[in-house]
Structures are given as C-alpha cells and as structure tokens.
Image (cartoon, rainbow, N blue to C red; front, side, top):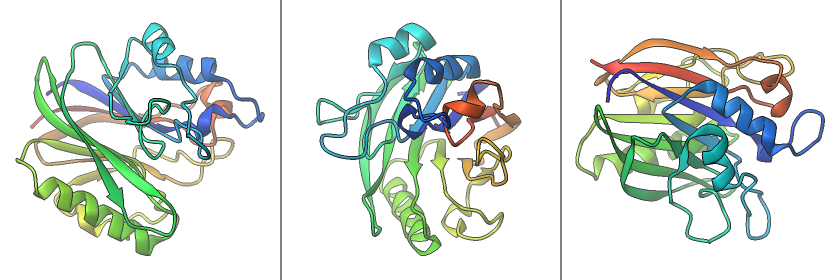
Length: 230
C-alpha cells in the first residue's frame, strides 16, 4: 500500500480524564484522524468477559471504519484489549493472535490486509510496564513474523517505553517512529505510542492528534503517520 494513513490510540476503555465513559467522543476523535487503519488499545473492559467499550455498528456508522474480526469470545472488540479498524477499501485476508510473555496477560493481534495499493501485515499491541518483559514481548512478535511469509509490515501501539533508544532492540530492522509526546493527555511528557514500519515504507508525515476532545477522552493522545511505498 502507498499513500495511506495509519494511527494508534490507547482509549482507556473510553473513560476520559473527567471519569466519564463516553464512546461517542472517542468515535468522534477516531473519525477526525482520517486514517485507513487504526489500532486501539484498551478497547475492551479488563475484567470478566471483557466486553467491548465500543459498538462495531456505531464504529462503522460514525467513522466509516470496520472492525477486523479477531475476537473469539463473542463480546470483545479485539483480543487482550487490542483492536484493529480498517477502511472499507481494505480486505482482511488472515488474522492471528500472538501470546506475549509477562507478569500480566498481554497479547498482540496480526492482520494480513489487502487494499487498493497492495498487501501489508499489521501488528497491533500494548506492551508491558517493565522493560525486561517489553523486550521479550517484542521478540515474540518478531519471531511470529519470521515464521510467516515475508510481506511489508507495520507494528504499532502503546509501547510503554519511555526511553528513546533502549528496549526496542528487537525492532532493529524497522524504522521506529515516535510522532510526538502522547502521554499524559493532560500534560504530554512521553512518546509512549509508536509506529514501527519496515523499510518497504517511507514516512511522509506524522503527528499527535491533540484537540479539545482528545485532551479529555483518554489519558493518551492518538498518534498517526502518513506512509508511502518506498
């Protein structure tokens, strides 16, 4: 694919800094991104059956994006809180759930996508709180990718990594973009949300969506990147 926008956002189960659960403003912010592919973290509630905090029909109606079908529970939007949304012109060819090691349950979701500009693989994840486990989690993701047929790949999500140059060694063959400070939404000081693209892509532009809505809708701000085929 070329000339497309990808975005990632930790929506904190749609609970804003005002402590209100407001899916409508989250959907409004997602629509404003204008992205072809959006990765969400904390899209499902954490306990019990982990029900979704966004309705798939409302997502499509408000944003024009469709949920990649990866949930096997019947109630969640994604898996381990990770969800992927794609534009109507994109076809989902295959999906995979990747278990990640750690003290707390973590996972990543993988989707092979085919759009009007070609084929790509997208991995969406929410890494752990300690660097030791984040390193192991990224290694698990890259091992899963190495076991599959090679194709242009993007890994994105809430990396939870405060350092600019440590903890991401497993992504040495990727260009890791931190579009800007995305956490905490009320006073952004850390670039925790990142987009790692393989050399098949060139970064044309990237940024943080800091608006009146996003500053209160979650504790993270959405980040986005415009990519083109290299």
